[in-house]
Amino acid sequence: MPSTKEIRLKIKSVQNTRKITKAMEMVAASKMRKAQDRMRHARPYGDKIRNIVAHLASANPEYRHPFVVKREALRTVGLIMVSTDKGLCGGMVSTDKGLCGGLNTNIQRAVLQRVKQWDGEGVKFQATAIGNKGFGFLQRLNANVVSHVVQLGDKPHLDKLIGPLKLQLDAYAEGRLDAVYIAYSRFINTMKQEPVIEQLLPLSAERFA
Image (cartoon, rainbow, N blue to C red; front, side):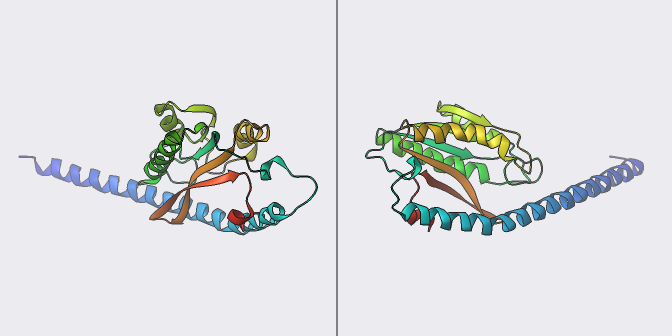
């Protein structure tokens, strides 16, 4: 049976652990609020861009950009998969603290289902992974991963993203891909993130309106 001194030391140790976890919870909550604020500020810009794209896609100028030209058949597609860098996550793309629940699992399940659909239709795909979890998942699938980027931090910079993404965009423009899709988690609230697989190319007025 432990002595009174040992019990007091155990109580003190538990209290110290409680203080540390409380501080970590406050830090994680603060980071989440900042990430949510950045998302809310960016959404109006994103919505306006979608409206502009819809307008351009429905226009009939003499020049048609390759990104709005629809292919006759779907033979090879590009997939851009967005995930976190760690299983413990506290930010939006690359994160370090806070439990992310099924965020990665749900998007992986959605991608696996789509890959099986493509496979059944005889459609090949090449992938770009944004985030370490998605990169590892695609490697386990033995997917053709043509580019990847990890460790982006809580505030991803475009200069780190443009290179890996450009490989997919160039492949479509050159006719080597018939469509490009992006798989990501749409933020609903802190308890719910919806897995989404969305066609990026060719641009469509119906989808972006």
